[in-house]
Structure formats: C-alpha cells, structure tokens
Length: 315
Image 1 (tube, rainbow, N blue to C red):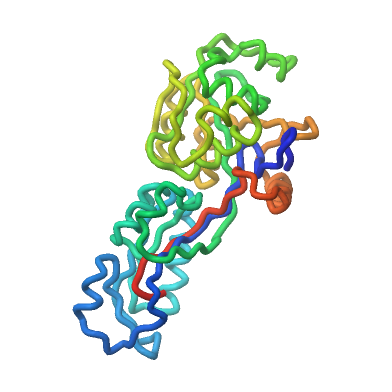
Image 2: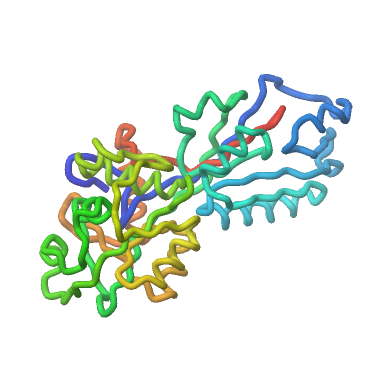
C-alpha cells in the first residue's frame, strides 16, 4: 500500500512480519556425549540431545514480542506433539526485553517485531539468525463517545502524537470526516512505555509518511516522544487496550493480537487514508495489498519482519 511519496506496509496502521531471532556460535555441531558442564554453562538451555529426537529432553526458554504470543503458543503445542521430552516456554515481555534477554544469554530465542537496532548489535556476542514467522497489522483504536466511523491520515496522526492536535473537533480532523459530529473532547494519545515492536511499526509509518516526524522522533522500538501533556503510557498490548477502554478521548496503536479484544471492548477502529485517497481498515484484502507493496518498497523503514532469534551454542 503506497502512501504519498513512499511505500509503507500499512493498513489502518502498519503491517509487520514477525521474526524469530537466534544467535548461534560458530560451532557447527556438538556431540550428545558432551560433558554436562558444557550444557550448564549456557543459562538459557537445559536441553540435551541424541541421534534420536525421541530421546531428547530438557527445557528451551524464549521471550519477546506480545504480538507473537498466539503464534508462539501454537508452535510450542505443535512441537510438543512431535517431541514430548522437551519443554518450551515463551514469555511475552515485549520485543525489546526479549532481545535484551537473548543478548544476556538468559533465553535461547526471542520474538521481535523489528530487527536488532544497529546501536545494540555489539551486545550480541554470537551470530544472529532471523527467522520470519508471521505477518500481522497494527490498528489505530479510539474511544470517542458517539463516533462510530472515524477517518484520519498520516499528517493528523503525527499531529496528535506530537501534541499539535489536541481536541477531537480540530479542523484537521473534521475536514476528513464531513457529516460526522465530533465532540470537543480532549484527545488522549496512548503509547507504549516499554521497548516495543508495535512502536517500531507505528513510528516507522509516521516517519515514512511525515517529513517532520522523520526528522524528529523518527522510528524505533523506543523513541524520544514529543512532550504531550495529555498522553498516557502503557506496558504491553493488553494494557494499551485496557487504558484506551477506560479513557474517554483516547487514541492508541495496538497490535493484531489484541485487535479483536479492542473491538469487543467497544473501541472504534480508525480508517487510514492510503495513497489513492481511499480510507481503509485492516482486513485480509488491505493487509495482502500492504504486504505486496512492502515487498517492493526497497527497504522502506516501515517494512519490517517480526522474528524469532535463537541464542545457543548450537542451533
């Protein structure tokens, strides 16, 4: 999906492909007869292997993206049906914390909605491998009484999260919503306080579509957000939904993993303007179009892949 001037993966937010990250040593293999002390030296791993998968046992721990929670749980269940001797745990603590845990060697793999930032690369002492695992959108949720249809564009979104647009009946918003009665309710932008792949996707979208944002906060799993007196923060996707649900005037970016919860809770879902001037929400058609556009976007910062990363002596 192309927004004016630049192609970004976006459908009423942005689309990310999820990644599994793995960091492996240069050792290409290891015998099952290795001393027990060698396995114990790797904090994240207690699994031992033999030539037969049926005799494998131990525990593999992972952590990271909340967006990937459902996928990871499904993958763990499927793995368990093949090899019941190995226990796999995944802790959805957010992409940034998952990458930190991987770098610290306290987990074997991490789920992340963005690649490792270049400034953090030196923390990883082993080769990092990226494994794309899924694709999903983020959506823009809102809580405005009496408003069931709301259209916004990238300029307005950047203005809201910069504190330049502060009420729901601001002329910039009413111009996009003719015939809709918008209240003078103050806008309460809600953003993630933790290091988040959803923040990476959302700020990548703003950077790719708004020059002022690009030259200011730019994009990342954490950014230097503009000072907005009315803003609230939340840790993790479920808290983003809960905070928006309990806050009249709220607007928040949320991952696909909680989109249905947001709608059930009565939150609205913004329609975003695309390059052709149409306003779209995330659905199968618009997501597929966004992914196709992203595949040909020549590295636009909004085109990213959530992943799993593994940090072990061998993979």
